[in-house]
Image (cartoon, rainbow over all chains, first blue to last red; front, side, top):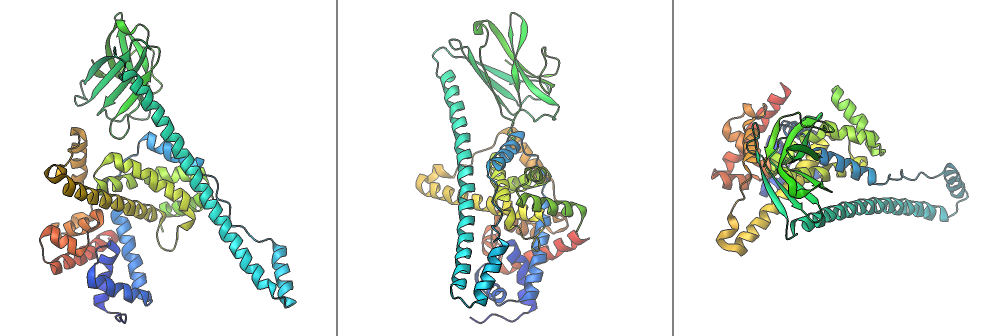
Length: 264
Length: 184
């Protein structure tokens, strides 16, 4: 099919094309027109794409969780540096020029070979990057599997003690669970629906034994409001009377000072 | 080009040269909007967080493919995010359709998100972006279906039970109004 000539009708297909909404005959017609090299349509299309970028940026932003941020930066750091595109040393150009001057046939072959070497080098770098990323993914998956196995060890113990924590005060929708294995004295704690805190604050888990609060550690929550903490060597698990979570300054405190958000 | 974009372009060149600090800064500047866009398209926060990692990893790996003549760095990142999120959404919908066929009546159930997540989502939906606010509700619905759900003219006409020609003109007029609003 011959490409349609430039017209207002063709121009009017551009915004829907940029949106990805064009289909059927309209799509075929516009693509044939663009393929025929209409510079004006290309220019206008770029402007529509710019407008869509602004539309994309108009959604309300959502801060990513610290875990996501840390993971992205860690993965990036684990990806090896891409070797810069190999530059042929200067002497090679002189050599190639000399060969050409001498009218030697092999020069063209050499240049072709260099192109091939460059292609293979960049392919090797690309694969190395992929391998490094996969290695890292495997490490993360292993760590997650290890965590899951530890959790299962606690949860599957016949004498596991579990406590449900309920949301208090400003966070009635929050909930928490603790599981303690009295034999190994390991405990697991999960929190749900807790709001994320400012940078300078943290959640702190406490257990109350002998009427006194003992810190079990601090934790943060992800974008879904879920937090997790593993506690080792819980002293005298059988004497624990209650569990609680408070909001404290970052790093935690020896005795609770902030608002209590979960108790059970 | 504003100052923001000038800084972004400088950052992109440094990221292409594998500068980790520049990458961290780029993440800090653009991850919130990218996450907002991913969540809007996927309507699922956890999946959006996971996809955000993939998008930025792609930015890191392919920064040398960024074409400064075609888009701003922010636009490039957001369009990568949109395209990945629409792919994921289409895959999810086609597997849901498969489940419906296999599972009969029980397959079509929608999983209700938890209370706070639902409230959060409703709140986000209420926040009308200023540019879209100037369109008629019909124009806006068509553009949103195309942009955030990846539907074509014909699919939008089916979804809204509206004539195809009407959908085409709503999109055209809506996009023209959007441009006016953005350039105002």
